[in-house]
Image (cartoon, rainbow, N blue to C red; front, side, top):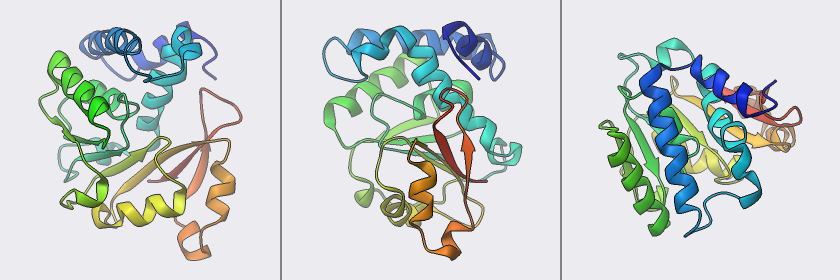
Length: 208
């Protein structure tokens, strides 16, 4: 389990190199600065930024195959409702050579994401500043979403971007098992719940 900021930083360091850590340090500073202007994260979570947000996002990479992250996996990693960049920017900062598409319909947050992408020089990451329904479909190698929509609606909205090879990694907090249970059996059988490393009572719905 990741129980503090030291654990969180050490965990993320095991997933990336010095360049990735430097990008994430820059990102963390930008989030804290922008959080004074718009409500990106809860003020109470600022002292646990690495544990609650960065490591919590980075752990999604441990729940997809190496093939999903590799150069021959096909289309981009699609992050729905990226907000301030969790998990999408974290994924892009750790894997800068993998194409990542961030969908964020709120204009101020989309503008912040553009600022972050430029500051971190994430040349393969881009923002779709509109609702997912308006985004031209493409085949996604993986789909992530943090607090985007209830599971059944999320799967429906993301279906145009999903193929048989598309991985799903969906942090769902303490409602993970309950949301999975609402799906029809044939769909439910494709997914399972993994325990979060940052919260013993939280789960991640996975289709790898």
